[in-house]
Amino acid sequence: METKDFDYDLPEELIAQVPLEHRDQSRLMVLDKETGDIAHRHFYDIIDFLNEGDCLVLNDTRVLPARLIGEKEGSGGKIEFLLLKRIELDTWEALVKPGKKAKVGSRFIFGDGRLCTEVIGIGEEGSRIIKFQYDGVFEDILDQLGQMPLPPYITEKLEDKERYQTVYSKNQGSAAAPTAGLHFTSELLKKLEEKGVKTAYITLHVGLGTFRPVKVEKIEEHTMHSEFYTIDDKNANIINEAKANGKRIIAVGTTSCRTLESVATKDGIIEPKSGWTDIFIYPGYDFKIVDNLITNFHLPESTLIMLVSTLAGKEATLNAYKIAVKEGYRFFSFGDAMFIK
Image 1: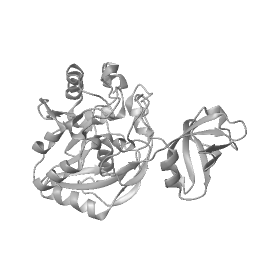
Image 2: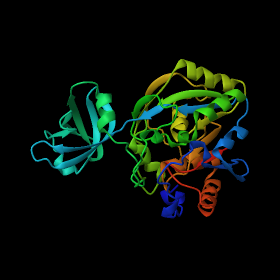
Image 3: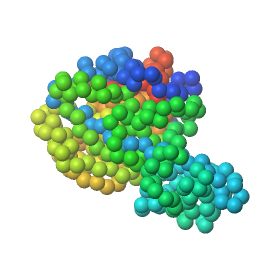
Image 4: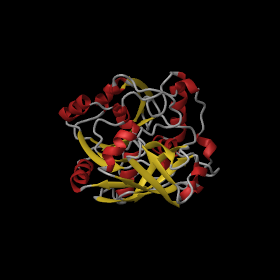
């Protein structure tokens, strides 16, 4: 299969620049994976498509305010760091712009010296390994000095940092939000609970590798970056019980989907564990545990649209995207949602 098989035309004006005022009032396209039929609803209608005993699986990762603007010690030249992942307590892998300023041994300061870092190594694809020095609690300092690492296609300033977090975000560590979850409100989750829908939580810290373009012609040759996940006994049991009762497992977002498929046995049992996953789901893959998916509309030729195509079928997915463009749906992180039922 070729990367270009997952291309589609998207007018730039359909890329959502800001979140809607009310999270659950985004539009919802419902795609039947058996028939290819499509219905147009709003996200708060998701309750109509979930049944008692079904299990929603949500990714409770929390986005780090991982973009730091600072200056080079001595010269004062401006520099931007984007934290990708924590290697040890104060040691991180980061993307740096401009990279030529960030040679090994270079030092940089942020927030009038409240936070300092030194480049101690070179990582994959030109990233840098950096070590921070500071007084106090790192997370508190980062929360005050850091900015949300919004994707490059979002050019508007985000007024409220919490709008790039899910309402159930808990475990800090992501470089990007699990955006399918941005549509849920606490009230909607409570209504689902009252209907008897089960919720289980996993954690996958989203890395930027998920969103990097596929640069090879043959998708089978693409290598995914690894991301850290964890799932505990309690939530594994909730999922396994729902599956054993013949109920549906509905992944909220591609990150939840990839985590579930990484930890599931070939018999569709979830094992509690932590680790790193580089699973790449593309057509031909057989799902072991996930039945349905709530997701946003993804970039052309991305690994995410390939995952959606695996569950819903490539032709049905590309047709749904064509209709979404025609109907003026909002795309990407702050955009509208799709439910593959």
